[in-house]
Image 1 (cartoon, rainbow, N blue to C red):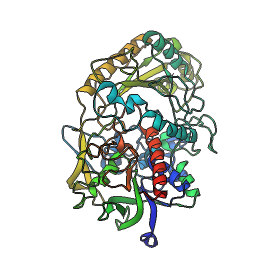
Image 2: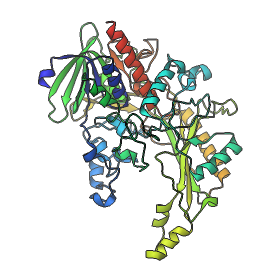
Image 3: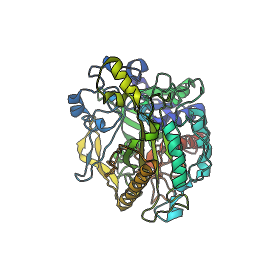
Image 4: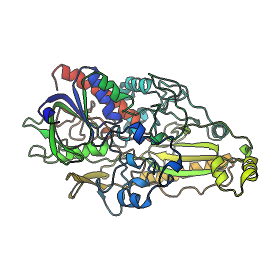
Length: 565
């Protein structure tokens, strides 16, 4: 890197995940020279992907070294996807500490590597509509985004058409259709539930919308349904940036990727513009500097905000973007009730249904979106999702016996399980925020974040409505051997959909970035990840993050080529 230290790139992109990958792809293809800095190491499928490993090939047979998990990953291990197969995709908590109010715990799940959390994400891909972008116009709470669905729609089209999103076209205004590949089919249990949910509630149950290929696309083969997506994918049949967008950027010859580069702060000149960034070598801790005409922060919502906050100077005493007083505020993450389940008695069978899929079903948001289904106890709404399948292996493990006798027991009546959960929309609240903790630093000497975040009255009221609806659906399906209905909300942060903290807006006094993700205080600095979100809706944010990233990259290319940035 020594020879490159004095080189000035057109753009530095911090972060190599879903957002950074799209920014780099678009800018490189438009002629910009891009340097990408990634805090973690590269991942190699032949070494790091484990989707086809059998438990006997692992030292602890898939259960993991409990001592190591407790000592090195006490937070990360709380994520369902973090186990012996995948723990290397998650950070070492001793190197990446953070703090929170004692009575307000936050669960921060992080993946630092080339590709970031795009190697681990749940792949569900939903468009936001104006029920999200213009929510304040509907119920009077908070602020609208400075953009509408129509402005983002062409970018949704572009992203879906390129990465491949499977789904069914439903024609619902509050759940926009996209450029879909053929949907995955519903299981027998889901067809059974679909009919009852439609008849009893007037709601539509449909195949989930997923960035898993159901047909070949752009040289990538269709998903082979091994159902271990969080362990990596040798065939690149689901979207992740190292398999899709980063190779596109590299093919232009204008892309440089430096891994193990932990960015500390922006370097700002006397005119209030960024001249580059300071980063530390992850392994040696040596400090280095990279220079560029434009800096794009795509390091994930909270990491990008931490970099802005840590970029303090006499001109920016609260960090770059801090003049409005809202930097770090309006932190959001979805909350869930997980989950209600039981056996569908009419589908017990001695024959096994040949269904395997990486996704299940979704019932989109109807409450307070469809005028037929108001609930005045709370603002905004929630969706329901889950799956239904035969429980062959769980059933087998519960039985005793050997040989032919055991096989016959297993085949007599294979139970058919139905599981459903609810995910709700948090309100953006100023009092939910992060700040730098001057008393704590990470392994590279960078101040860590302190969280001040909790659920409000609206979230608790919505959770009550979610629980009631789960109970009504379970009753209508007449499930047997039911699990107790969930009582508690998920821990703040558990859904790994953190958003806000550098919100978008037209007014520099009330927002951090403008409608093109450009920092009001520093015109050549952009924030393209979930930090820019004004509202979160109840839907997963990644597809919207990618659409906004491609849109911001188009703007950067246009304005940079005209020498306006």
